[in-house]
Image (cartoon, rainbow, N blue to C red; front, side, top):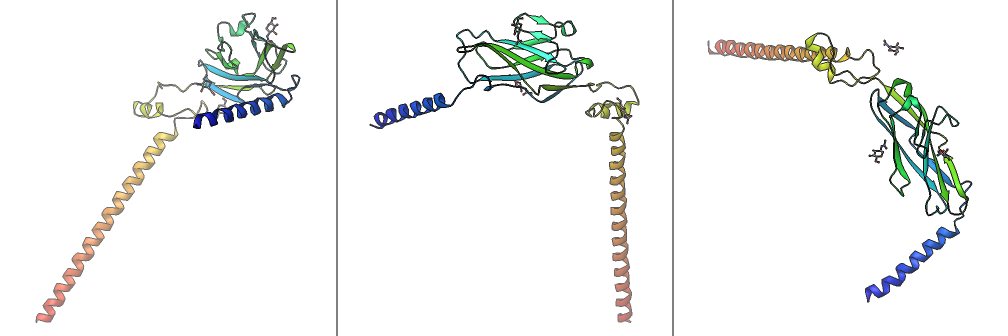
Length: 226
Ligand SMILES: *[C@@H]1O[C@H](CO)[C@@H](O)[C@H](O)[C@H]1NC(C)=O
Ligand SMILES: *[C@@H]1O[C@H](CO)[C@@H](O)[C@H](O)[C@H]1NC(C)=O
Ligand SMILES: *[C@@H]1O[C@H](CO)[C@@H](O)[C@H](O)[C@H]1NC(C)=O
């Protein structure tokens, strides 16, 4: 009985949702999006994933023939990658890979073996076939700002005692990184030493005072006894 009541209710809910979806107007000239992260950073020689998601309010053609392209510099920058043409700019030869599973609207463009010159803006572009308006293409307006940093060195030449400590540090700006930790270690040791000295002094003082007090008491006791 519970189920026979629930089913029509669910159906009603589904119909209302569908109707709401239909009545929400889809303006194919306005209602599309290409989302990608605002900012990414990776070490030189590393790999970056520019994740993207595109959205279109209307229905897509049965075979939407999705094409993804990538532009650097600015919105109208020269195309460096086009999935349909299997095109990769020679500066990025063998270094750009698209991952967009069939039928999905989210994927990522990978740039491998990053160089310092790759530090740039990147704009993802999509083209696809829609059911009602044929081929449509659009692109992210803000793009992704990619920052390349120098990877922290894992082996540093220098005094052996500091090297092991330095490698554990994450590099802040590439230069002037290794100084702070050995200094702070020294500071910690200094503080510890100071505390130890203070403790000894206090203990010494306490013992001395106790000894003096008990001696005083003894003297008083002797005086009284006499
Ligand atoms: C990009 O997407 C992948 C899954 O496809 C995810 O594992 C990864 O964390 C995402 N990266 C960022 C920066 O959002
Ligand atoms: C990729 O190249 C094809 C052929 O020139 C073009 O029609 C398509 O618009 C390009 N893709 C994108 C996303 O710009
Ligand atoms: C660190 O290097 C940058 C250039 O890469 C330089 O402008 C800056 O002055 C350097 N900073 C220090 C503290 O040496």
